[in-house]
Length: 165
Image (tube, rainbow, N blue to C red):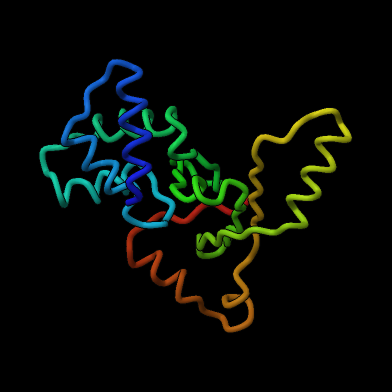
């Protein structure tokens, strides 16, 4: 975990009159230990392996603090549970490609999209602050080869796949 994340959270907590607890530090460390998107339940599973005494409520409250502090972003990847993205601090304009077959999420950046965003917002009299683009697509491997290792791994892990629209 980047030390600046903890420093920014510490400043936020101090500013709001809250305490820095061992449980919060554990949750923050777990949230930023991987560059992967996660749900609150997935984070709770990570945390409970390290600190069994941390409750779901504490995880949910800490997630709220991290979002409010601007350290995590809630993103809509089309599924029911809220998904959190720990990667936007270093890459605030990255976008997401989501496979509707296997649930795989690919982050990408494209200067053309950023330029289009800038042009459109300025033409309409706005100043862009951030952008979020999610493209839903079908899995090329499943279509061409008839099987997809991501789909198999998703099913084996017990994760629920999103409903196709």
